[in-house]
Image (cartoon, rainbow, N blue to C red; front, side, top):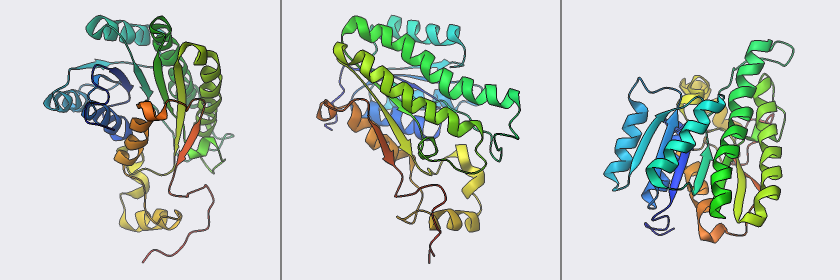
Length: 262
């Protein structure tokens, strides 16, 4: 995409304080978009730091504290985005939580509700609120973050896999409902990405090597690689893609036989 391929566009990215969300927000800004960056956590300065990075790229930005599981928060996020920028062209749903090491039988109701409320309900609420703005514009682009474990079952992920599978059907249903109004809806299904979100899996060199051995390409993805695909989906070159669930996983599948990494 050209450096100004998204010039004049407005993007909202949830979960953009770090990791994949941050990388996507910066990639969109690099292509010319103005950004609303959102996260539940603001007191550590990281979200405001992302907003400042966007401004240094010559774009406008707005940082908001948002709990995507709360309708009131989501509606206020959309209202402030429209008030500040006049429209919403792109929504990227990156906000998510997981509770590692739980089987479905181990998962208590509180943990189930937390994961489903943030990952699945939160994606739904954001799509609904921003989608209504896009309907008035007769244009828009929504990208939802699912996962390879939303396509394939994996041990000890409990409610997380269920939430990510739900995002896939949510994406397909919305793509069907919104196609007549020139609104595209797609999902990304990353494999293992090197972020703070799963740092406990790879911070130890031995553990990182073991994980790399389970990936045919021999390494974990960088957040910027996920951002590159998201950026493509927002471009005119992807104008005929909707309702798609696109793996970006280095060939990884849950349960794949590890190979030796030298």
